[in-house]
Length: 105
Image 1 (spheres, rainbow, N blue to C red):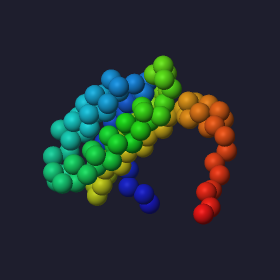
Image 2 (cartoon, rainbow, N blue to C red):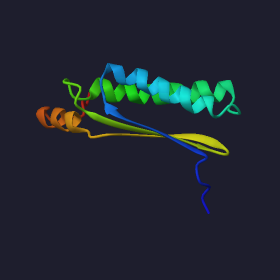
Image 3 (spheres, helix red, strand yellow):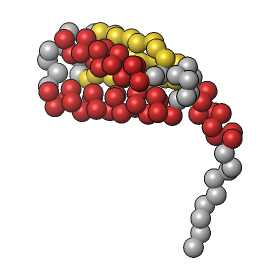
Image 4 (cartoon, rainbow, N blue to C red):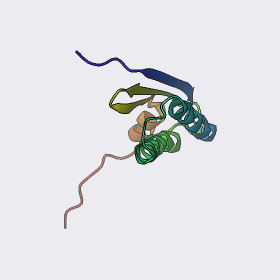
């Protein structure tokens, strides 16, 4: 049987630059209620979550209308993050580009 998360923290927001501050706040909320996670584990987890969130913002819709959902879960032996976005801008960008071709020497 899979363990149930001890905590669940969620953020549903538009993927714009202000979203990164909201992600930091959600992580701080999670750490405040999880004092047993080491500083090193916190730093590595935060770096990964912020990097992915920043990529969603960077490659999202120019108008900031890409929707992003972040769920942070704390289990007895690990934290987990689940990020989802609607992918609309990435789909539009990939359709407007020429197909990728391998370059051969």
